[in-house]
Length: 389
Image (tube, rainbow, N blue to C red; front, side, top):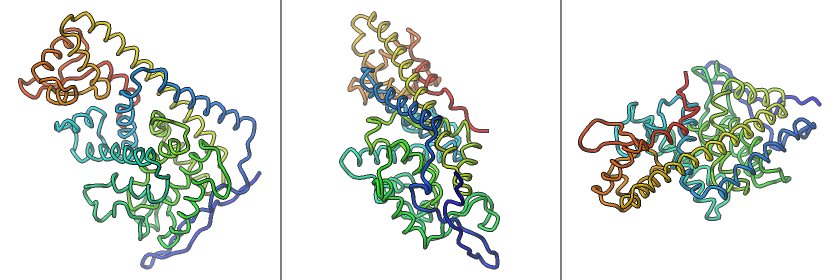
């Protein structure tokens, strides 16, 4: 089956220079996706992997503790794709009001991603539909207090031309639709998310919608991060994942060149099938990695609980500190006291016990405001988090 350009070009000019902006055709693709046995098998495997990962929330007694770390890991990875240099440790230190070892703006930007995702999930759980309005809300949180923020109009669809790559539209790698075409593009995009004009299986919908969102590029900035965040929100909205444990940014980061090449191939040649294969493989790999990490984290925490149980009278307070460290593996006595409700003196005694057992280690060398890490727990979360070249 042959497809052609998945949309049309609009000829425009900036000053004396002409350029072409691409306006995508509405979803779903026409002609329809060719579901070969191989492609269908890939999506069957992806659905099975998602189901297994979703079951983790039932199998793990402390799955809720993992969510904090999983969401923050996704925030770091998604922001790395956009060029920030903040690590997971930097983000956690920033959230403790500790000065991270990178420009503060990088850590602040990652922290905004966390807030944006949490805002979107809270709205969905409250019954608000996944919609253009919710996307604007999430974008406003994502861009809040950002340097250049006012110029980038947080929470508003763009009213001017943007481009990807190059220094101007005339030499850009890709030029999304002009601003006067956005309303029509976004109207069809929202209808597709709401299963109009026809129903689309949630995982397939997420794959198709991701390409369409990145192609429309509706905001002046933050489109890449919001496009990846939208995958998690849509899977939650369609009931495929009860908790945000599945994120694809690590796979996209590992295969960045292929990712961008496939997005472009869809636009130019309509090769949706190869993109869908890539997306299904990303889901399988990401779900398996998340499930494995969750089980390893549980095993480590359970092993450490058994060691803490040998502390006698100090067990209860040390256990409370350990529980908090499972959701945030970096903390100070003050932050841990606030989370546990224990006094700082009691927390400090617990940290002495946990350090002696080899469960926590101090990251600082100072008498006050010391920072402690649940090092082995953090090491599992940090796998695959190498900074980009």
